[in-house]
Length: 215
Image 1 (cartoon, one colour):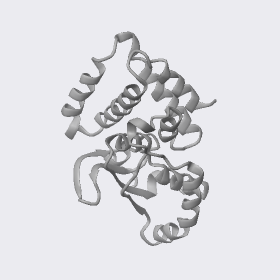
Image 2 (cartoon, one colour):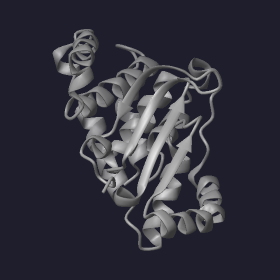
Image 3 (cartoon, helix red, strand yellow):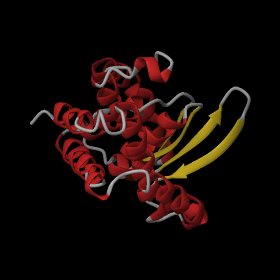
């Protein structure tokens, strides 16, 4: 099944009612909030209010598009982890709306992960876990590529990875947070300027909140 084409078709079906960019953006934020509110009660009230503000802009008959999109994303990540949200962005041709942003293909990130894996394995053998920091995380493809490389070598990324990621773009934060959460990774994703060290928000995955990989 071509999950990207199926997700793009769903979003494009709402083109004339709401606009492709709005539906994609709202899907990201609603999904991130739903995942966060299941475990991170510190921000629950504020994020729930934001969730309701978004949902009320849609007709009741149109709201089902969001769980349908999430179902496709879950299936895709279970079949083969990849930066599906970054690929969906490219498929929808949202470059003009998102300042010309481009998402790195998995093939390139996987090559980089293979080149760097030896250093990570050495750290794992010494400490029992690997700490990663990604200052411009985008959709999270670099970390997803490392996740895949570790899995192929017989390691469980949910147990051994501890991730801190940042991005100045709110949508990129939501994209990576959603995908890291669904992959069961232990991650904190910060929204803000890494160079200035000024951050507005933090998104903690269920894997982080439940302590997976901390022991």
